[in-house]
Image (cartoon, rainbow, N blue to C red):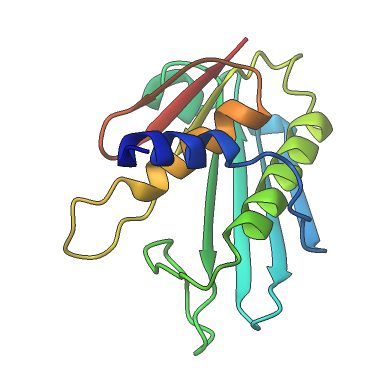
Length: 171
């Protein structure tokens, strides 16, 4: 079997749905006066890694929706919280084999967030994700993984990756 066939098979299996999401806690802030919402989700893996997921949405007359991105959208950023309690910036790369459970948790939290803010009534049909890369490398492995999850779990009309950002448009 060719290596490309094996890789294609792996990416086809990514996100097939059997991985269980971790239990998580969340905070929710919705600022109706400025057409935005934000949720922070916290969870811990069995290895003791503490993850933080930030999901934000912008619509209507919000500056980001109007002038920066040119329409309503939401974004997801997640990272392992530093052991020293400092600020996580999403650039740390963790490879401990918990990938599928972590991704299942992020997908579940994102779907709940979108339902809670009633994304359809706000015409939010675009998602932006900035995947981390291994420092010093031109590394698209995470981008490929995230795009496979997005395609598998969300009603995607189109998805593009420009080397820095993944932008998905929903049906």
